[in-house]
Length: 509
Image (tube, rainbow, N blue to C red; front, top):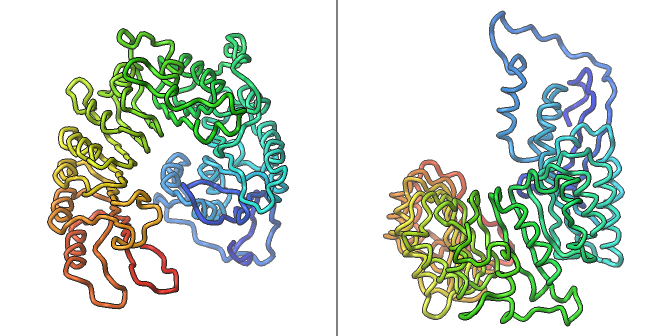
C-alpha cells in the first residue's frame, strides 16, 4: 500500500494479500486473505496539482466504459489489487475483475477469514461469476470434509442471489446434496453445471417440478460430468438430456477405478461392463446418451463446439461418438489419457467427420508399441486446418509429431506445446532428455516449424542438452537461432533445461 503521506482520503479500499497467482484467480489460502477495511483521512495534505489544459484528455477524464476496457486486460490479481488502491473510481472499476473468478481453500484454520470475505461491505462480492472450491492442504485432515461442508453452506447462503455463472467442487470427494440443492435454489442463472458424486442419492429428487420451479437448465450451456457410480450415471443422464438442444461444451471424465472406493464394493463397475465392446454399447454410453438411442438414427448435438474427454476407452465407441457428436462443428477438442485414441483420430480423418474450424487441439496419451496414436495424430494434423492452440504430450513414443503437420498450421498457430518421451512417466517428472528419455526435435524440424509459425506467441518443447557452466553446443545455438526468428513470442518454456547436477534447485525458464 502506498505511503499515507501521499493520500488525502481512502474510502472502501480492497486489501488483497495475494500469494502465488494461479489461473488468474483470486485465491484465499494459507498465504492469501481478502478483506474490506476503511482507512481514515491522512493528516498531511497533498500538493495541489494543476488541472489539465481545457479540452485535453487524461486517464481520469475517460468514460467509465473505456476504463473498464483497459482494466479487463490486466490478468494478475496482484496487479488488479494495486489498481484498486489508486483511487475510489479505479477501485470501483477494477474490483469487478478482481473478484470475477474466485478460488477458495476450505477445511483449514483460514475458514475463520471467510466472514470478512462475505461481509456485506465487500463491494466485490456481487461481481463473483466463477467460484471454485478446494480442500486445503493440512496435516490433520480429521473432520476436514465436515468443516468444508459447513463453510460451503455458509458461502452459498451469504452470496448474493443469481450472480454465479460457474460453480466447481474440485476435489474427488463427495459433495453435500443439501448444499447442491441450496446452490440450485439460490443461483439460477448458471451457464456451467457439474455432476459429481454426492453424499446421498439425488437423481430421484430431480423431478420436473423442481427443474421448472428453479429454472435449473434455462441458462445452462456447459456441462462437466464426473460419474463414479451408477447413481451419478443416472444423475448425469438427466442433465445431458435436459440440455441437449443448447449444449455448447461437454466435459466427460469417468472416475470409476478410483471413485468406486467411495461406494460399497457391490456398486463397483468392471471396465468390461462400463466400456463398449464389439457387440454392444457399454454402460457408460447407453446410460449417458439413452435419450438418443438408437444411435444410428439419432440427431447429434446441434450447438456442441467444445469437447473434452478423459479416460474413455475409444476402441469400440469412436464410431458411436461420431453419430451423436457432429465433429465438423467442434472447435475445441481435448483428449486426455483415452485408451485407443488412435481410433478416434482415424474417424476424425474421414471427410464426413473432419472438423472444419478446429481451433484448439490438446492430446495427452500413452501410446502402444506400434505408436498407432502418433501415426493417426500425424495424419489428422496434415489434413485439418486452422489450429491456433496445439498441445501434445505423448508417452511411450519413438518420435515427436511430424514437423510438416505442425508447420501446416503456421499461419494461425499462436500456442505450441510439444512433448514426447519413450518412458511411461511422460513429461511430469522429467528433468533432462538423457535421464527420462524426453525427445528433442532435430534442428531442421524446429527451423521448419519456426519459419512457418510467424504468429507464434507461446512455445514449449525440449531442447538439446547444455550445461549452464559451459559454452552452448552447436545444436543449442541452432535452436536459439531458429527461435530468435519468432518476433511475437512472449513465453518460451524449455522443459529439458538446465541439466546440470547442482544440488541447488534452479528455476525453470
